[in-house]
Length: 111
Image (tube, rainbow, N blue to C red; front, side, top):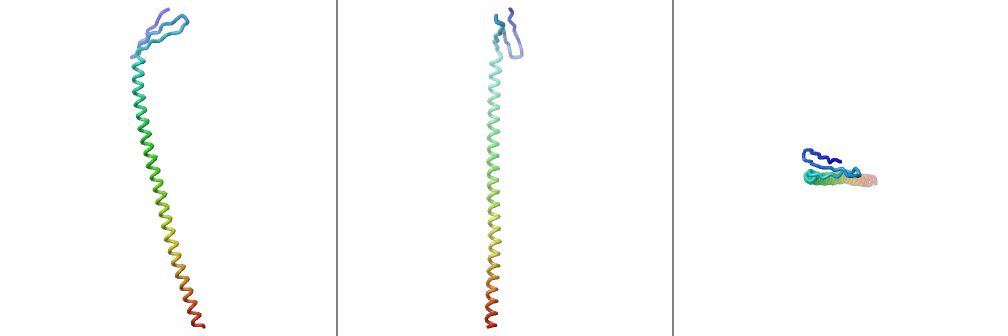
């Protein structure tokens, strides 16, 4: 039975078939690969954390803007309603007083 040596870029491995036709692989390049993958994973984690932080900030800003829009809308509606009702109340008062004054004049002149 022959052992086989594989030589790829950074990966030097030797596999020796055993009697059960299983092979054992002793890789030298895996430690470099796992170290590089570890750094890449840490970089990816940092990128994801930064993206999550920015998105969280964006969500908070939009929540604040929506809340501000609701507050401004409610203030405008309340102010508009107050102005309209105040004008109507003044008109009703003027109409009521003028009606009573005109009724009092008629009664006084007719009576």
